[in-house]
Image (cartoon, rainbow, N blue to C red; front, side, top):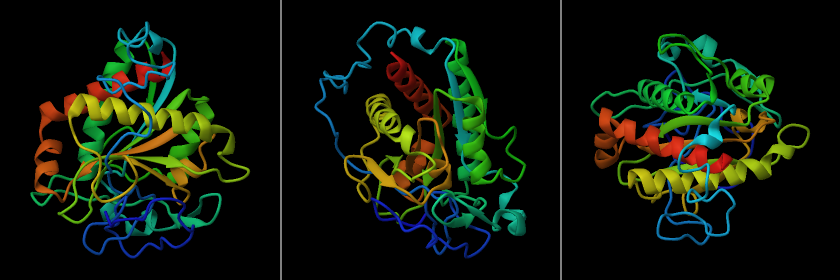
Amino acid sequence: MRIHRGGPALAGLALCLGVLAACGGSSGGQAKGDAAPPPTVGATTPQNATGADPADPADPAKPGAADGSSLRGKVIVIDPGHNGGNASHPSEINKQVQIGNGSKACDTSGTSTNAGYDEHAFTWDVSNRLAKLLRAKGAKVTLTRTNDTGVGPCITERAAIGNRLGADAALSVHADGAPASGHGFHIIEPIAVKGHNAKAVPASLRLGRILRDAYHSGTGVPYSTYIGEKALDRRDDLGGLNLSTVPKVFIECGNMRNAGDAAKLSSAPFRQRIAESLAKGFASYFG
């Protein structure tokens, strides 16, 4: 992914420059579709030794969070970024779609590690691990795609799936493709787009903060060194966030172009830790 400045982004500036566009930025000269930028360092709210906000009612230390019982019956949508067939179908993924305040490419192909581990494969694996954990605690989980060999769906449909289900929360899973010197993770939060996501933004910000703390505590991955503020980056150029009427955020789990991050993201045991950390975050959010 290409580094994207934090804060509001001007919709329409992200024109599709080719097939190999990454969802949160582009590696090399790749352009973004529903891109998700890179990670940052710190914590927005006072935290205790476990990374929990002592003033937050969803503190993981509270009943219902630690045992995951708070997840029972919750409708959660997990969006594995990109898809395995995107790169070979440029005309489909490069078509422009309306994202509430402009237009953007239907989808992108994502980034990869220098060793060739693709972002779409990473997001598919993590999302399925996470879904399994959430379902085991009684949550009703839907993924936005059913395999890692297809094309899309478009960013508009990814948002629409959560809206149609009236999801209690939604998460789009990504990994970044920023310059190799940067490392760490970050959460991308929405900015209100009138007539679309405004009512869901407050809950989305809370979801983002809680997932940030859970991910940081559970994986040990530091806040991004190259984008955002305390691992939080707010944007209004992502269709998946602009069009979501339910609480939703993106996570960039690390920078695939950084050797240290790439080694972690390429490890199956570490991907399980990622899933476990995010599952705890959801339990805390609903707790």
